Image (cartoon, rainbow, N blue to C red; front, top):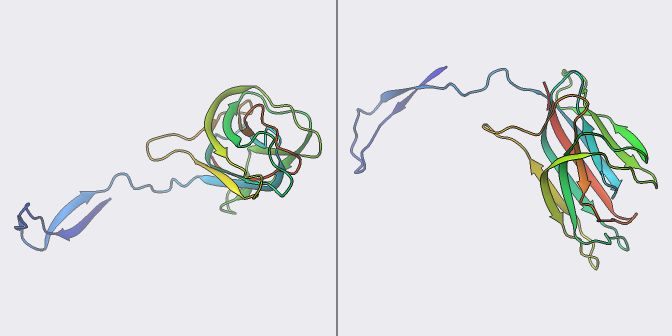
Length: 202
């Protein structure tokens, strides 16, 4: 794709080096065309402070790339982490969490003409905490401070990838991205998290 704009080129003293109304032929080769990817999101409110808070499992048919994650901690009066602050971790796992009361979250399409999501997002409810799976590595960490005298909303936001870097990628159903609290931290039953995650499938 080539675009032509009228330009005038000046030297450091402001003297014109070409005639006014000259042109500069610019070849734009990096402009994306037809490369938009199917994008999905899950948002869950009022999650208890289990670890994991939420996990996304890879797909048997698509490559899953995580683009954004956000975690918001709302601590009502009388309920706050016994370990304060809370560290939020974004991690890769080779096996998923088991036990507890798992719930599969429906994925929202950014474009309703896209196919249904093939990744599986799970979160936990009820009084029994799940048993976390096998960790491979941590991608990100953020600390959420909670003021026990003045409960306030705190949040952590993670964005992955740009023009030159990749996003955390799940290849197959044996790979998981897990949003969790750091080991040894025990939010009370009155500590709630809102979590959302965006990803693409290709």
